[in-house]
Image (cartoon, rainbow, N blue to C red; front, side, top):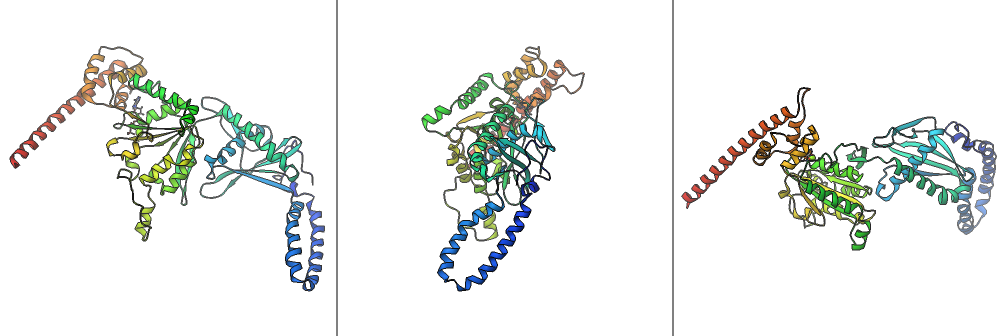
Length: 486
Ligand SMILES: Nc1ncnc2c1ncn2[C@@H]1O[C@H](COP(=O)(O)OP(=O)(O)OP(=O)(O)O)[C@@H](O)[C@H]1O
Ligand SMILES: [Mg+2]
């Protein structure tokens, strides 16, 4: 039953009919032969000793069942699904490689295509097959068919089905699939786009979904003490180039950063700058939508290498601020207990971060952010888990100068001295400074923006001074009360 050559424009409809074309007559004659055989079998069977039937004929039929199936349908199928719980173990990666490989094939062969931008800042498109589209490919004289389908469910899973003749089994498994993987990886490397993954929850479980990561923040636009910034960049470089070093000292190739500081001091901006600097994907875990420790573990396992795993506002994310739960919880008995058992616990998070999986593949950075570092359990942020603690503080003069250069291209201004003095008293975040420096209308320029900043700083400094006086009076009153009580 020869299938149309791959060079033909498009097997129709969807190749399935061709695959079985010509089988009709064979099936008809086989059907009548089988019917005759069954008739003879029913006549003969009562006269056969039980053992003959059970051990000899049964065995014979089982042995030849595969041969019979192969005769009826010699076409084999390999299914490759995206994000089917094995991304970390390479199944998701296989899908991505197949998709990249097919992008080159389908550009000339498929009739219904999907297009996405190949990489940030380029005009190149990456083409892929649309759902239910099929293309043929030739490899060392063998023809294979790739069929793109979407498996149903709450989160539809994009899937490729690779169909080929059984006589090519070895060629496909030993040579063609590695060829697809190799070529696909090369194409991916040349068109790689950073991704931002977030965990979503449907009625059954959590899974990752992604968008293209396009955050403009870089270390060039991040305002902070230059020496501190340089130290962070050096740390990232050492990590990125540290594969052999980590292997030599016997540590998993991962590094934890704790970013802490008041709101608006640039923690999220710093994460984006790190991701852009390293070119890594970002996995943003929303702990409140993870219901169990097991699910959290699975999400971590599904992350790929060259990535930053982020848990923002870790102090508000889950019940992680209590002391480590040393005792095992009792088995759930009532509905409330079940609700309790569904929560992510501190030990669950620690296991997810440090589990054995974390040593496989490697090259992962884990970042926690918090506004209240003092609330966190020491176990969570100890060195080795959160290796580097970075304080994101209120805007210092260096950071202000950086922002002024960035927003208005100025390195000096008569108001700078005034601003320097006020910054020490005002405790204002880089986010607030940036807001004042941003022109609000066409008439706004460096002078007006700096004047607006000075006004805001003066007000904040005055407010802080008043608060300080009130606090000190409170302290005095408390001291007096203590003396009176005695
Ligand atoms: N150090 C900085 N350099 C440049 N811009 C900054 C800096 N810090 C803050 N910003 C500006 O302020 C905005 C808010 O900053 P960001 O979201 O990073 O703060 P955050 O520390 O993550 O706050 P939160 O604790 O509320 O999450 C950013 O969009 C950015 O434009
Ligand atoms: Mg933030």
